[in-house]
Length: 443
Image (tube, rainbow, N blue to C red):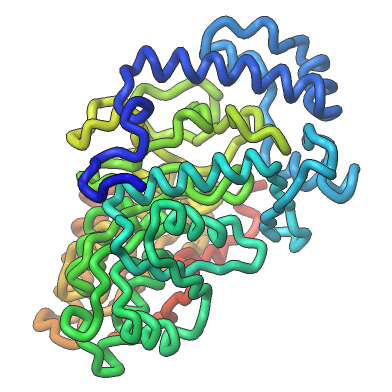
């Protein structure tokens, strides 16, 4: 077992030079593309149709010669070749686990794992937990859905590093609070909106979050909020605990990036997944630090390789050194999704942009909803936000202040409606922030 005082899970890997990272990724990529080509009927046909072959890859930039896939590809191929689709590159007897996400069609999209795939994933989760300060002496409650959700097995990473792990799942809030209290849990993982909801629920039940509970670390994922400093600070102030943002997706594995104790971006699993950040319109790479669509290529997952998977997530990255000593690239923010992005009078607006403003004003609860309508061929944005019970400003003052900040940050003017506390619905999983009432907008 690692010493609790040791800063790294795998020091040689986590602190290697950028040149060594790139050499490792190239070696893994070349091997992985060959595996996909020779063992997946889909990839062989796709690469042949595009006139590319794995043997042409001489640099990481050569990945741009290969065709994209997306969520629709996964659904279509799974329906065409049930039950797992022909992107799969191993015999079914080698598949030991599947996660699944329903998506918009309601048809579960399976993500298969071999035993080695699964072990690699859990080892990375342990590495990530360790970087966030989780240690063998912690009591950890995993408060994510276990029902086919790829975030469920991440709890095994906490167990691997030696923490006492409670597989809580999505039990009712009152029961989860009872678990946290009974076992004096020191760390939990949930969504940002649920972390806020759970804290509010505890206070309403008369629980003092600092005195009655022992939660000192909260890992969050599933929404952009954990990478919004204002949101993270509000949750930390509520709980008296440190909040660490994680990012994952069901189509590869649970969490692919997470904050270290410096909380300066999310360290990426570079030895598992190759990153591209592309302009969604031109498919050209954006400059480092610029916002673009996250496109991912697996480097080790043999059951179902994912080659140039368009996630639809809008992100930004940096390769600047982190004060923690880790040298992996870091997500600077998950700013939203292409399908959540609003275009208001030609300006791109993400809910995360609005959330940062809502959380900054402590006379607002931080809960908000965006309503978009079309009037006389023009788009109209209304932002509904709640005042706190202790707010001293008038509704007009709060609305004017918020509208001013929104205009300054996004360039968009909006009508602002101030609501009483507890008016907007609280999320017990992912918060729904946008209500688009326009019809026929996208053609």
